[in-house]
Image (cartoon, rainbow, N blue to C red; front, side, top):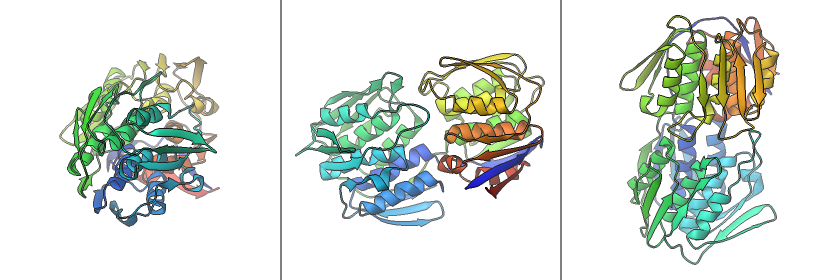
Length: 419
């Protein structure tokens, strides 16, 4: 099992290119099951999660060819059953249910494993399928959905902690081949949902309103093949901007979409950093003394929960008292104990972290618990004095394409070693 070893204190400078979005690629790859015709998807990031999704598609009968970031998929004949051995490694595997139900009118998919950041139920997905006319059973660890036909309906997908992104994706994919019109109320507004809707429309679907709280889907008889480029990964973008803030002389991220990370750039501006945006680049520079911050995670376009851990790392060495409130996944603070091993002063009060900035962090062996916590520990290691070793880096490989190599390009002394 690999570790990432970081010799801290090296200033970062220069530029790197942002990869395609993981959270966009996964449902779009799943959506290729909706047509018998070939699809070409470009800028698919090389991640364990995308590789797992391609394995699932192959198991279901799709022909998959991958050359660098381009994936060609032909799903002329597919099965509708995805067993536990295939889906257990990735929660996002549930997004194959929608396209299987839409095309085959049935699907049997094993329940995905739990998640360390807290309970992430899929009851809203199932409620949406039932509204479209599907019967839903959960038995023996499997989700079984089936319907003689799907019929458009009004579906509300707002949950306890806000709209469900994968639920919106799943219901939208099932509805594109349903009879009549489906209205998704309380829809997630994330750019990844918009990207999926754009892909579906290229296939011949009729989806309107993506990016708002109401999505309207007019069902069509069939979809055709198409080509599509995945949008830039906004969480990777935000992570590198925070890296530039935490120990940069000035770094630039290329192939980024500034409109997708406004909440993050606004937070950095509030902390006292200088941020410059152009057509597809964003730069961050130190601008004197940084300032503490109070932020709360919210559904898009609010501050993303997937950037909360990285901001904890940044604010841990920002003078003064900062406060972060986690409103999406209240238990998502597994990184705090590891940051405290490095000298951070963080007190948890329910879903709120109170951070007293310290003068410096000290390198230490730390353990990653989830994808974004892993990134936070790497960022802290860049800032810390001495050597930091981050273990369980398979979490990082789920969602960051060559993170260590990109940081090295910016001047970090970082290497991947065998444990």
